[in-house]
Image 1 (cartoon, helix red, strand yellow):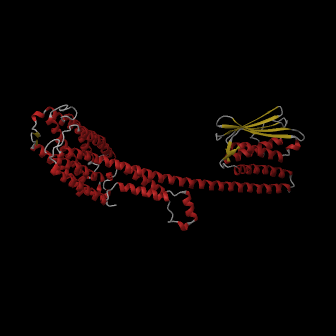
Image 2: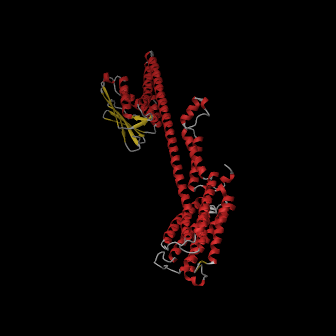
Image 3: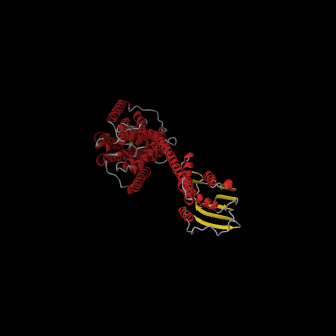
Amino acid sequence: MPACQRRYCSSGSGASGSIAKLCARRKNSIRQTPSPSATFRRARYPERQGTERHVSELTIDQAVEAAAASETVSAPALRITVIIIAVYAALALALMPFARIAGPEMPGINAFFAAGVFVTELATAFLIWTRFREIPAWSLLPLGCAYLYSALMAIPYLLTFPGAMLAGRPIVGTAQSSAWIFIPWIVGYALLTLIAVVLEARFGERRVAPSRIARATMIAAGAVLAAVGSIAASAILLVDRLPPLIGGSGWTGLDIAASTAAVAMLACGVAIILLAIRQRNDLFLWLTLALTAMAFANILATAGGGRYTLGWSVCRLSWLASACALFLYFMVQFVRQQSLLWRTRAALEQRVHERTADLTAMVSQRDLLLREVHHRVKNNFQVVNSLIHFQSSHSQSEETRDALDNLHRRVYALGLVHQQLMQLSNLASFDVRSFLDDLCANLATWSDANRRGIKVTAEADALQTDLDAASPLGLLVTELVTSAFARFPPGHTGSIAVALRRGTPETVALTVSDTGGIEQPPLSLDARDHESRIMKALVMRVRGEFTSTHDNGTTTVTVILPHAKKD
């Protein structure tokens, strides 16, 4: 893009510029952060690298290009503007011979004219100063003043024009008062717009400091209000001391001279825009249409020679067209922004949908891989268990067989955790109840509980646990239940109860009680035997609190475990 077209980003609407920047950042982030599926495809199909491009990225590119296009003016737009000016000039010149034709006296037309100018130009001033807050170019400050000044001047003009509000007379002032308001009105508007055009042509890149924007706006608005008030007060209160602008035969020489000066300033503004600013700023290109309509409105009014002539009436209509020009520009910008927002939103939603589908596929792949990992780990534990069982069955030493059997139980507890995770749809956690039931049932089978008349029960609250917590929990239950079986003397029947209950919101209580009946001191983790040291290590691993009691032949072991609520 040529530098002259990038010079002033306010050539589109401020919001449009913000949208363009947002789209550009979003597009860059998308390009810099490839989707998981795209990474997978590039890894699997390296020959496709450099050829893939998502349709949504193309759509976002188009949206960004559209935003950039809305901030510059194309050469055809400049040609169309020149053609419109030429056609408007031709129509005005065609009406010149008929400008002095007298028409019906309809003072009420000024009420419609003043109201239309007030509404449209006040709204335009607000929109220009809104743009100024986003893009604080010096040229926008006097341009907003011009439209605020013109909007406010419509009020005293309406109040002082004879017959506009009251039949046959003005509300305040005299017939000369409205003329003395009208002339400063057009001259002030022409002067302020010319200042804005010159600032844009000469200092288009300069900006007001952000800290001074609010102050500059308030000072400018205050100056406009003071100027309008002063002019209105002078035209109403001091009109008898001012030279007349309307004579018996029409406009006086002073009126014609002031109107000619205003037309000259308007023409200079149009020339500077077309020759110096040109395609750099579409706001000022639209301003040429407003200035052209205003210039020819005053030419026709001057040529009409007085009020209620054809030239005077056409002047009001042309002024209304001038007032609507920039307002229409902002409406067009609004439509463009809405279209751009919808296209960008659709592109981003499509991109989000694609990324969501990619992530869903990646999660499914991850779950499949995790399930396969749990399956293979469980199979490996089964192989290890088979080897341990084989070694135990061929061992001649009773002590060795007991050690291998205990090891067999521990390995099974670890394998059972992976089996539980493999069987569930949620690979992150599982319900501890089925886990404890299966574990205690197998411990009872290995310890020949039915033949010995020992009943093993397992109860638990509906608690969710994960792999990190379930593995030490399973080993701890295995050690405690195995220790409980060891406390039963030969021929003694009874029961072993395993319970896992929630205590507080942050803890659970694991309780293993047995009725072995042997009178012995409570179980201690400080004992020197191998099983006690294993239990102590497991309790420390889960950061639990161990207690053991023995009462009337019943031994109860309680371990308080920290447990975040996941269910």
